[in-house]
Image (cartoon, rainbow, N blue to C red; front, side, top):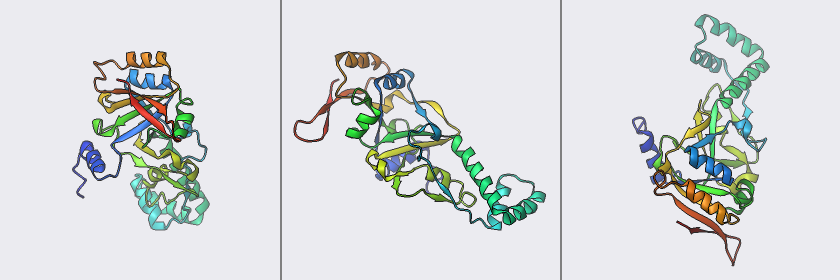
Amino acid sequence: MEYLNLSNEDLVRLAVERGQIPRFLYKYCSLQRALEIIGNQSVYFATYDLFNDPFDCAMLVDPNCSKADWESYLRLQGVDSAMVNSIVDDMMSHPEKGTEIIRDSIEKVKKNIGVLCLSDRPNNLLLWAHYADQHHGVCLEFDVLADPPLFCIPKKVLYDDTFPTINYLRNPSSVVEALCHKSKDWQVEGEYRVIKHNVTGLQAVKPEALSKVILGMKCDDNNIDTMLQALKRDIYPNTQLCQATISNTDYRILITKLS
């Protein structure tokens, strides 16, 4: 109840203060994609079908739905009271039909959810190689406190051996929770997801939220000049330009400030 009257800014700030989410989150991408984000002052909220992992957002449906579950769900959907009993009787007599209806409903929900995928770390070797064009790309650092409406609220991805199981009728919001589960093989990503209903595609991000632009270690002087020109100081006065460098002693990426 204590959170009901809090603004998005208050919610995000409170979550950061309590250590529930990091203040800074990172987006690995190609140089071209980074220039688009900077130039358009926007980030992309993707639908699940665009993810590169075919197992991503997979979930199991709990088929054990009671008569009361169906009655409550149908009334919430605005089904005429005169029809509820007959529909419920049909669902209880043909549970396989009910399960199929639930699956269809879940798919409709998933298709209208936009997801911004971020990481809690800027120096992961695998992420640089996989998402940032084999170290020719960029890692963008975002300060979630600088744009609370956009980043309200990042959810930490959980890594499992099996698909999450949800009971959609009893808890429709469990779909969102299930979207934050992935295979343990992806655990190295340290992923957080900003999930929004009925929000997909490009969404504006405040320029002050872009706190750092980290160029990959294979970016050359031309790339540095291109990025300096893109970071117009009247729009991005406080954004630091940095570059990743290789450690001479261990398997570690160092980040050096350029401007």
